[in-house]
Image (tube, rainbow, N blue to C red):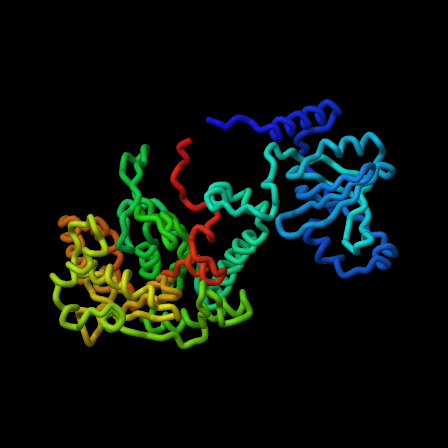
Length: 494
């Protein structure tokens, strides 16, 4: 149920009625512009008063009104295009008495198109001397009292459009995100990778240990799952002959929400044939240092109270050593399955079934990961929690896998991919046994993927990088909701 209208909202509706009575189209279909506000600021802000007078630069520019200062028969106002603002100056003796009265029906928040000449005021502010103007649309709700000061986090996330209007720095976050994705594409394309698309709806969810969202296809009469990862489809493409493929994709996991987790999120996932996880560690160092230098012009990035260095090489430490060193879990306790599960249950209350591998993963998440601030490759995880990874030649209980931790968060996860179809089936069957024992995140058996492996997949390394978390670090934002335009929120109940 909608809240009762405020006096301001009623007044704005009345103003629109008056505009319509004057024959003004309340929703014109277009406005012919010569410049955006930002283009005017960029192109002409360095010109002096004398240069502007000499050049007589005419502009036609639209924008949202963000301030109005009425002074009798003259009015100063500012319009904004989401990036920059510029002042407009409207005088009764230039636009005419009737038109000046029409401008009285405009409010802060309305869109207007103005045409006129650029000049500088006595305070030296770049300004458009308005010769005529066009009403573009009415805002029926007032902007926050201080247009640049919306601080309520709930409103900012729930009404991102309002956040973008009143908080200019928010736009910079999402512009940075867009540039980061663009530069990732540029980097991988330059290395010979091919960008592809794989299904978002899958008959069998795979490629990660996670709980999926389930849906139903009416025409086919089958259950489908929103993908938790594109991995198994990308590896099918390697079987088919693509040596280097990548996808920037949306993944969906039916799990908890936190400052680092959103149920749908963006991943970069890429695969390179004839390579192993060591090759991808080197490539990841090169790519992240390239992104930092290109986007921020530095390898030293501020994140929370830390300064993170993206200068290669990154530190490397084995999974077991990281747990022993950072959690206080002694080597003897590490190998004691019952003790490890008991410790993990202290962190995961309510979970009756926790496997040994899952318990180690929980301990790593809770006690180790938060302490790894500088870029660190944690390598050689237990085989039990890495069903798609190739075993280490010197220790068959460990796999050639790494997680890249930065700022206490997992940023990347990569393997030397298991390409033995017989062993892959055995791993899937172990996962299925765990699932039947109550571990909901365990893998199902994907028969078509196994068939693909039987046709032969060359030695391959694959990696996933969390785009949202990488943006968090580059933009110095502690919450994933700050870097996702429309984060999932619980519906309002009022």
